[in-house]
Image (spheres, rainbow, N blue to C red):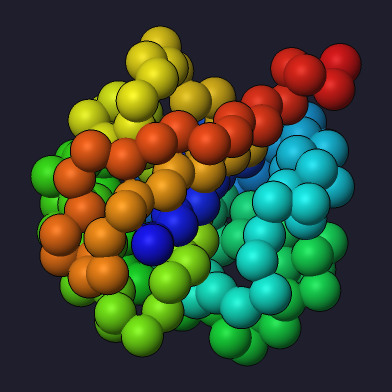
Length: 161
C-alpha cells in the first residue's frame, strides 16, 4: 500500500514584480499553512519522504509544515522538477519515488495537484485551494503502478474559519 500526501503551496504574493518562482507567501498564506498543518499532523505516518518544489512559495510552505509536524527541515528534498503545473509531469515524478518508501508528501502547484487528485482519487475536487491537503491511498507495492486510488482525507483552510 502506498500513500501520497499532496499539499498545494500556501497563498503567495503578486504585489512585487518578481519572477514567478521567487514569489513569497502572504501573511494569510502563512496563517493558512499553520492552520492546515495543525490538522495534517494527525494524518501523517511515522516515516515518510517529503518533497517540495523549489519555488519560494512552495519551499516556505514545506518548511512551515515541517516545523509544525516536527519533521527535520534538512530532510526535505527540494526538487526543481516539481516546479510544474502539469499533472502528467507530476505523475512522472511521483512514480519515480523509491518503492522502499510507502509514504510520500509532495508540496507543489496547481493545476497539477487538482488534476492529479481528480485523475487518481475517487472523489472529484473542483479545486484544491492554496494550503490544501489531500491524502490518497493506492493498493500497490510499486509507485510506478499507482492508478485508481482512494481519496482518504482532505484538509482545506476554509474548514477552520
